[in-house]
Image (cartoon, rainbow, N blue to C red; front, side, top):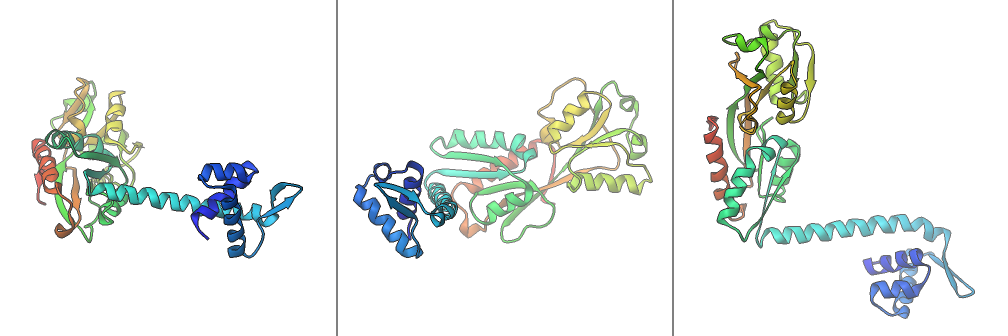
Length: 299
């Protein structure tokens, strides 16, 4: 069986006539009839009954419709994927990143790239760390930026580390301390990213090492959301400098915190011999913005 046969079958069921199916397929009615006949031969059972000039699906035909729809949907996705992959080689550049970098670090680098290469279509999409690694490894995306949970395999990795800033509301009593430590935050509302995020793991360890209680806290999946929660009063958070640069609110107070909480991340790319054009140039733009935010690189 083939796609045209399945489409003919689907259209006849949907519209109740071979005439409409022929119109949709841009073929003659006799061609549709032949497609249905060939499909029934391939399946080994009839999919339609013909009575008094009317055509209705058999019980087997009705049951088979769901399978036909599934096959057609899969073929459609495969066709769209092939088109996207083809476009990658003729003027598209795709970057995948976790939300924190898609929102803060990468837009400026992409703007620089687009200004220099106006004929190239760029795409920036936010995904989870694992998905970013998979998209780059499979070469569906040209470049990835994500938190570094572990050393990725089968790709080039450019590692960086940034010190996160401790933030509280300017009216918070913590703002009067010379340095904030875990002991100062017992019974405070702490905003963190999800439980297994590297910064959350580092914070739990810092509290545990100093014997401080880790009590009430709020989980979110964006540093930007953490800033907004702090601005509402009462909460504290640790924020990467890329996100922090987006907030200029006078009530958001950055304060020294010990021990230092860092965020490790990486720029991911396929092996050098498999890289599409312009990857190195895009990486250079990203590095410029990393260096502008006072981070330690090449960890």
